[in-house]
Image (cartoon, rainbow, N blue to C red):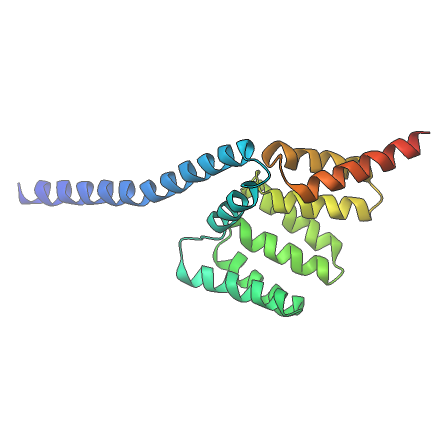
Length: 186
């Protein structure tokens, strides 16, 4: 009887742990979904605040150590040291391979170093992990423009506007690309 009681306690403990760990992930996803809905309905005065809240959610890994690696990588980028940033983001990717921000940060670093191929690969991975990552989409669109693929860039910018319809920077870029493509059609 004592063995069955012990086994029952282990099962209950495992169940409580599983539920306890899944609730914060569900709450974060629900919160992100709500923020994306708010962003889709935002006006030009409120979109930037909501956009910032979404990015803040993206940057939460759930681990203080991983958040520190992300912060160090971002700081290195801010200081104009993409090579140092690559090291921090690579460590982040190695230790948290399901955290899209590590790939996005490393992609940004590679891009600044002129390494387009690795940047594209990391953007692909960031978007596989977070398909609504409008910053990664914007990075990909910028690269598409540089590769003389304005149609692909325009399609990406329009995908961003489907998520974030008030983004003034993207709206201006879409107008510029449409004008450029119309000029080519003549």
